[in-house]
Length: 383
Ligand SMILES: Cc1cc2nc3c(=O)[nH]c(=O)nc-3n(C[C@H](O)[C@H](O)[C@H](O)COP(=O)(O)OP(=O)(O)OC[C@H]3O[C@@H](n4cnc5c(N)ncnc54)[C@H](O)[C@@H]3O)c2cc1C
Image (cartoon, rainbow, N blue to C red):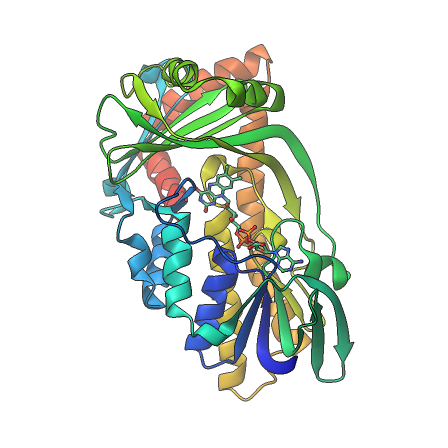
């Protein structure tokens, strides 16, 4: 089959689907290719994302507000290292908001986006294997024979993006030698609509509030520790989690199945090449300690569609290299800032240096006492 469209999006993850929906809403013809059928099972929900007010506002503007139906808003954030008295507290009120963000399920998000998209947009079971540039656009070839002509191809196919590789763009970075272990757990006490984060020497542990009273945990730990945590039985794991969270939510009384993801930093120096744009993890991967990877990806998708629509409105060639370079410049500053911040925090909390230990202990407490600085950080946390 060989069909044509304005935008061919490789990857039906959350970023690819949101971008596709924004493209359709803006009047472009769009196709999304994915090698797998997107997982939409709400019942088997294991992965959750902390979404920022900006991401949520954009999803709502696309008519995808249903993704938030079972989401849990949080209005408070507590960050500490060893002594909770020296921790840092953020409140949505510090930045004049009712919420700092929402914890949204992967299945609920994908399910909503898929329901909003016209059925012909998604081509599931279509693994992208090659790409040719032509005078007016590109042709993408998928395993199984599907061919797609497009004016612009967007790589939303994740950290190991095939489209990025095929287009000659590169991504550089390093592995943290950590795994991010995720699971849903039930604490004895109420989470009080608070996102809890403890910085441990082996990596940060986050307990994010869910609407049914459970918490979604993201426990980033050095690979050897994470692997041993994966092998514990539920009771022993719950006990380790209770200790690691210093019982701030009482005992952890039930734990669900655990999943683990390798943690790394990746960045593509250019987010665009002739006829190609990179979005989401295909462009950048950040450590999950600030819960910003998907938020950055959704901001890429917003910026890309806005750039294309602006060019089209004033009668310029919307898929020309100039527009794509503009998009690339717009997004890089934001991403590099978040990347530098998360990487610095990972390093600061991993070091055994005595001076850094004192700075960490005193630093969090002092920051908490300086209202403008606390407000600034709360604003960063809810971007
Ligand atoms: C432990 C952990 C916790 C996180 N928590 C948060 C959080 O709280 N908040 C937040 O904002 N971010 C968070 N993130 C980051 C977030 O998960 C990612 O940034 C986000 O999933 C990236 O989405 P994406 O759509 O760009 O890529 P992906 O979700 O990786 O989707 C890529 C899609 O491309 C498809 N694909 C790949 N190759 C091909 C091919 N050759 N042909 C066709 N299809 C292909 C795949 O099947 C997949 O569907 C976390 C990450 C981790 C590891």
